[in-house]
Amino acid sequence: MVFDTNISISVRCAKCGSFIVGDMSFFQMKNGKMVNIKCGCGEIVAKVKSWDFKTFHVLIPCLICGKEHKYVYTWKSLPCEKFKILSCPSGLFDIAFIGGQKPIRNFIRKRQKDIKELIDVLSNI
Ligand SMILES: [Zn+2]
Ligand SMILES: [Zn+2]
Image (cartoon, rainbow, N blue to C red):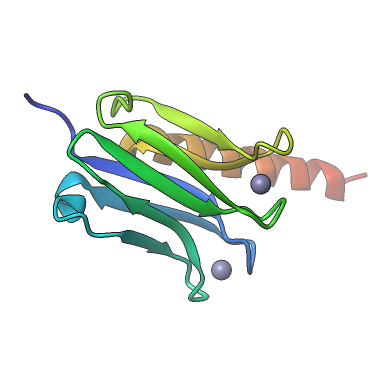
């Protein structure tokens, strides 16, 4: 079976508000090791662990409700050319994005551009 073993996760840090893009690979988790995605401020923004070779669990401390949310995915359900949006169950807020390295980066770039354009628009009012 051939599949992309690298996935990316994008999360906003609950402590300082920075946008983090972290990469992880299947091989990092092969030994049941927990992969911590850290922000530059030292805060752990996401924890990923694979309990078997088919599924992996993503734990994200939510900046909206303060709880830690758990999402379970299978490697197969996460095609590397797409990404999934992880939202807080208490509301309609998107707290993280997970998927292939390329689509995540393209999405973040577009999103940052949108945010920048929004700021430009607001500052011109
Ligand atoms: Zn931070
Ligand atoms: Zn939440």
